Length: 194
Image (cartoon, rainbow, N blue to C red; front, side, top):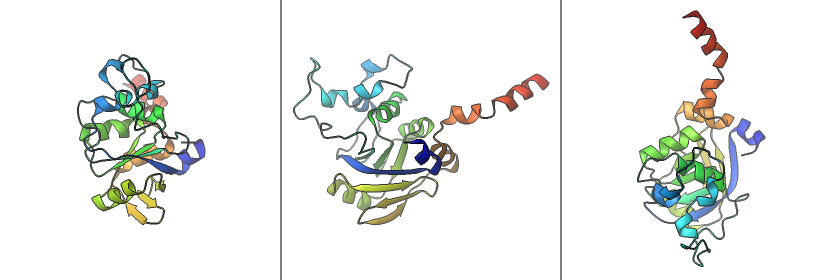
């Protein structure tokens, strides 16, 4: 998200579809790549087993081959996205791969929480909206994070659930740690007075 969009809390993008239910965190980023605590560079391992053979060559049926990171920053996936084990590396990998938001009819709770804590917006929509998006790949969407509104070109405007604190952080392009560090001086002053 560019700085101007961060401050406005708007994502305007095309969608990229993965019409698969129950995509788990090990599919998003395999466990063998969880050896780092750095966020940068994890995009190369995003959906690795779907994209590459054992020898590192690209699979001819790679479902992400047509993804255009600068243009398609919103992933549309089947239901129950992010199920499986808890790993912050999953939202990190998706962000580093170029996605800013994921739209599904259902997310695993832990994945959803990890995403919100790390700057990836999970958007829950009803089945009708999801079916429309999956039937229309590369769809133009506008996401107004602060007002919790998703506008679909040729479909209309729908709301989505998002707690106020996560909306505050996402519209400012900060995570929960950044939020705490904004008050670093007040925290230090309090510690000195205690």
